[in-house]
Image (cartoon, helix red, strand yellow):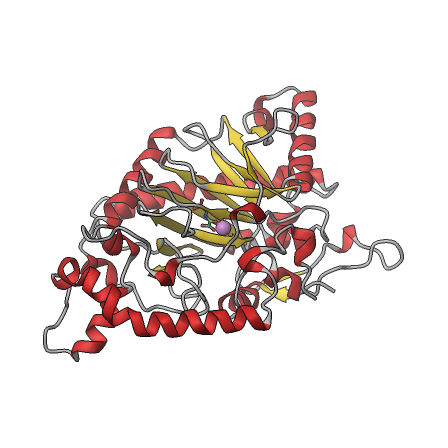
Length: 411
Ligand code: OGA
Ligand code: NI
């Protein structure tokens, strides 16, 4: 069932849990439990004292809830000089090859404008390039797109402003756990399942079919609504090109995935500066649910994609979208297009913001390989059909590493 080797990271901490691994995690857990109150608290006490919400609460539970409120609070603690043990990975740096893109095999770049204003040849070539990018990389960058640069910048500014709110204001959205809760603020990756914590704070907002937004900061709602409308349009148009590249009618994916009622989520990620960036990870290797993830960032790099078993650093010029093929496009294409395994590394120099926009089927859509792309003899369906919302629940309740969830629906 689990096929990690082919994804190229059967090494390090993400290998299938062995007994030793589980024992070492148990030890880590116990050490965290024991050291949490002593080491971490003494490091953090003074900086976090001001965030105590209610002095009359049980002191111990108050302390514990404060400790993991956000990485931002932790990172801003003046006493913090090293990464707490609960965030450290036991990866062997030699295990994983990290490189910049090769000149002979550059990250694909798609000129979106050619889908509309190009000559028939240019349009056909762009669709062909889209297909190749989805097949060989599961990742591409989009230039000359339809989202104004000023809106992208304004949205990133609003995300920054959100994370700079008082912790109490953000905590209003903490504790929401269901995948269909409209707004979720939190820290780490898949907090209830994570064995180690990740150096990341996030807010996830469902923005379609119903639009939601936090009330603060004041300009967030309007900026976000416009940004989401524009990115939804971009995603749907890209999916038309991708449908054509699969030899399907242009509106095939839009129609069968019910994108008029499609789920769109934005996930804003904050990666605070980390004193020992080699010891912590912003987000572990994973692939995303949904069809496409359109990612922008604040000019600070940190995204790495797995390509031909190497981690490739993604550096991006402003005004580009980094587009990740996600699990439901892999399922729909019966494995022809691959969802890309990616991760986020952290830095000790700068705060990084990334904003992911997930374009996904409606929650009730059963996603299965397109019957037009399968036949019983030579190309049988390689994935079982599953409702999108059940797939999301599977993600939430599983330990995520690489394509572990997708592999569970593989036949
Ligand atoms: C995500 C994601 C990577 C990044 O939000 O799903 O993988 O660079 N983000 O922040
Ligand atoms: Ni992701």
